[in-house]
Image 1: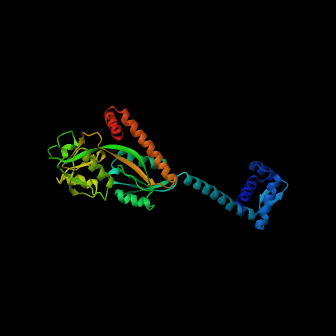
Image 2: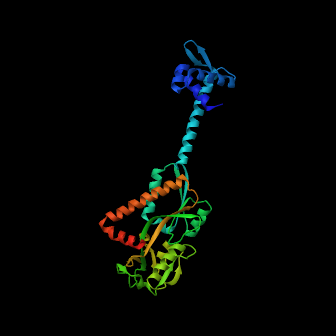
Image 3: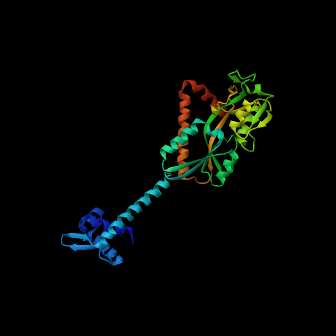
Amino acid sequence: MELRRLRYFVAVAEEGNVTRAAERLGIGQPPLSQQILTLERELDVPLFHRTGHGMSLTEAGKALMVDARRLLNDAQSAVANAQRAGRGETGHLHLGLTASAAFHPIVRALIRAFRANYPGVALTLTEGTTTQLLALLEEGRLDLALMRPGTHSFAGIALYQIASEPMKVVLPAGHRLAKLRRIPLTALAGESFVLIPREESPMLHDEILNACRLAGFEPVPGQQAPQLSSVVNLVSAEFGVSIVPASVSQIRAEGVVYVDIADVNVVTNLALASRDAEPSAKVVNFLALADQARSAASAGARGHPAKRRKAKEADHAQA
């Protein structure tokens, strides 16, 4: 049974007249009458009482009318659902993020914006190390991942930078440098560093080591920590010092202080990673919102007097 014939049937039943139904459907009266007769032959029951005043439904026609309306509504819903899915407005988006990425304000703003703009998409967050997130991406268990890529590139992975931020030194509160507002990295030469193992977060690990090497010294490896919150806690326990993204200074652990770094090139980038294959509409939508969030954050930094110097320093660092 063709949906087209059901639409014709419903139109004739609602109008009670073939001429008016034909005008409503935008087709000729003879073809419409023929389609109704074909439907009746297909079902092997009369659907209409035909009188000089018009057409009325038989008992079979009344029964069909109920199901025909439901089927037509279901067909319209199916089309609408397919179109919404094609536009990335329904379904499920699996987003991974590292612990350090979760602290950045642009990440919170981006997640809020996606949920507000695409309420029909279920968003699942998975936290993990960079290595774990890359593996989940490759396996297809994540659609996107927020991470700090440093200068690395990965086969089969596309990276979209969305933010850049300075790094800070985190020191025990009783450290000799703790009362200073800004220090050069050279002041940390000879200090024991609390670091996340490279196998857990190769990008952030390498960024910290490279920053120290550019400053002219090799950091002394000390106690290792599985994640940034552990780094801060170990510094608080005076296991050593460390360098963290500025947004991590939101962790207000007792016994630590965060100090700005005088070296303007000590910055870390935040990026969205996706599989290099053709992205889904949901991924494209998320990336578009990320681009908007990046532009808004950049405009805000340049427009606010207190932030202009930091924006200039970040631009200089990326040049």
